[in-house]
Length: 421
Image 1: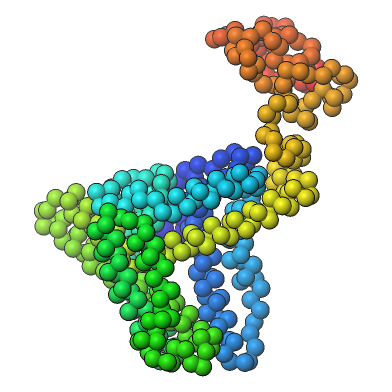
Image 2: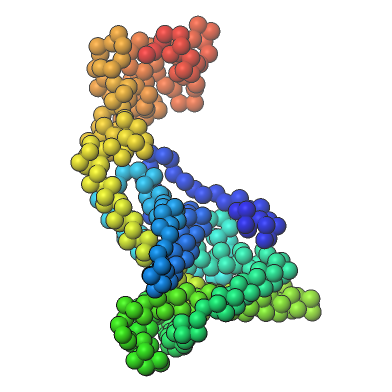
């Protein structure tokens, strides 16, 4: 929020839609809530750490352990799942299905839906991974001023040029492999757009990056495989990181040119709505052709795998250790719910049951003392407070809880005055 406010000058408020603390949060909602603050920084830090490790293992001069770095990106990835209550297999299975549908959903992918994607992004009601990423791109490139975008491009271009200068040329030679793969994937993207947005072709295009090794032998010869693939792994990883960086800089240059054309059209008297729609369509094409959406898909699949592993471990831990995770995250009342049952499904709250009340031996058979009668609704004569004060509820009339003045009083007031325990 601070970074977006500094670049665009707009302080946005997003209704996150977080559920109650004792409700299970779906993986889809967790991703939409934390993908900017947790997941994106985690993957960036993880990539930098991997590049560092493959570099230092080629020098034989030792390396720093980077324990805090590892803890940081691992915590950003698993913390949202750790604080999601009730790791149960039916919920895990449901989250896997819903999150897979979220990743591969086609809602918002048509060119005519760009304004709908923008509207849903502002209200945090995105339906698919595509809408989530594209709405963020539209907000960034439409809200930020041209000066800020140019300054950011100059800084990113300078940093990328510096990185390519200090990296040895024998590593940068591997960039040609990914350029060839990008050309092949661009043809698949064109086929994807012509085939009514088939997810099969899009997933093939994403998996197409695995063709870098067999294509690398055609591009660079036996140099890619000799003396072994493992020995060439640093060159492949580092060149791929540089390639992604250069691809994002190229995308910035393209969108800055598109925004300049958008300003020129609006200043020349053309329709602002048409010019804005064409500009949004250019952002949509850049989001797809410059591989941003494909990177988001790869990260989302990685998150689905990590979420599954962490949730299964929490489920086993909760089952063996007597709902310890639920007790730690929520309270002992929720942790006492038997495995496979829902809280308050058939019995009253255990901490509020008559057996635990001081001075009362009555056993409640109507559920919680503070719950409405499920059978009679609002017109029942059954007491709402089990114990001293019978009380009827009449529709449209405030309940009289035995006040000497005839006015209604809250449950907290009754407790303080001894009407109910």
